[in-house]
Length: 135
Image (tube, rainbow, N blue to C red; front, side):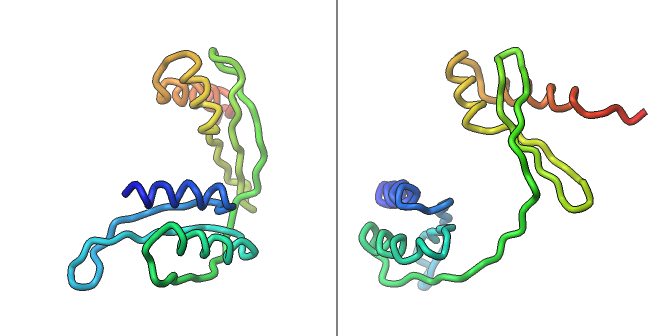
């Protein structure tokens, strides 16, 4: 497990956009891991080499995927803890979502020595207050 954790950190440093590991049962009922790496196509060979050097794998299966994403912008909310960043996203029909930025919330939680969920609750309260009323 330590090797996988280290490899995941190294993959992120080497340019992976995201990395995950999930436990699976392999052939002959042996425990194993699927290491998933999301990256730009131009970073593939560097990341493959990193996986080969940091793990005991003899092969990598890869596939090309397409991504669909919401239009987005960065916004800020003033809370009792100060300004906290969030992402606002919307689709072609105008349906939207606002999500607090984890790093900003975590920083505020550590600074104030409070639970992270308390910061999220405060940001979500400000998000609700900013929505137009449906009267």
